[in-house]
Amino acid sequence: MKIIVTGSLGHISKPLTQTLVQQGHSVTVISSNAERQSAIEALGAKAAIGTMEDVDFLSATFEGADAVYVMETLGAGSFFDQNLDVIAAINQIGNNYKAAIERSGVKRVVHLSSIGAHTDKGNGILAFHYNVENILQQLPSDVSIKVMRPVGFYYNMLAFIPTIKAQGAIVSNYGGDEKEPWVSPSDIAAVIAEELEQPFEGRTIRYIASDEVSPNEIAKVLGEAIGKPDLGWLVISDEQMLQGMIAAGMNPQTAKGFVEMNEGRRSGVLYEDYYQHQPVLGKVKLTDFVHEFTAAFNKA
Image 1: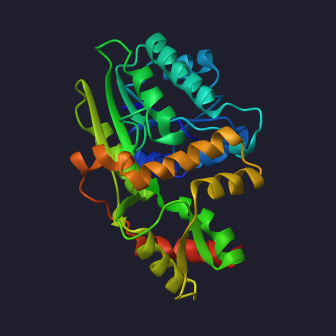
Image 2: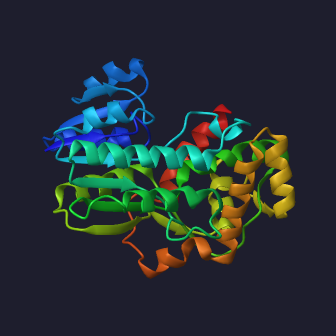
């Protein structure tokens, strides 16, 4: 098949591209960075250099494709841009995809969404995934859409490193012994590749997770791996979390969204639909990710 992959050579798109090429598909990878072209071609794929903000570019690139994999992202540092409305910017990307899919005539779409996209309330920053899912649901009924809803990415734990270094603890506005799901990008890529080879029919949703562990278990596993066996997970108030993020330079609107997302973890809102449609867990466990975490911690 001719498959278009968005997301350049990111955490998911790179292993996805490698798998699809190995399976014999003709893959075109969209990247906004012209310097990535040679690396994309080295994987056996074609490079299409342009942006998610350019509907004409997207439409032309999607033209003639058997399937497209679409995901929304913003540039590095966007959460710290004081003038950027993250929700509005990502909603616009969703509208751009919708327009490009309609113009190009693509009938098979795999959309990377997220845990929490089942609702627009109580999920904080993840509300944009709800918005984009609903934008794409407005496509004509003959366009089949497979919605992928991964849970929290392991590599988000790398954000714990500064407070571990400075305060000797993981610090957040949620915690405890309640298990929650986490996922590896490689497991996400494997599921997407699997779904692209399966028949498309109507609109479907699939959750993706690799492991289920509690915050306190995470602190124990990470602490032992980095030589801090007494590492704890310190729970602070929502207001303390919000002010800390703003003091670090984060856009207040975005900071509020992250705090509300963690509130959704505490209340269970974030995971209520996940547990009603619980997936088979993937291959990569927390004990596998600790090697990546340890390397990053030692380098920081």
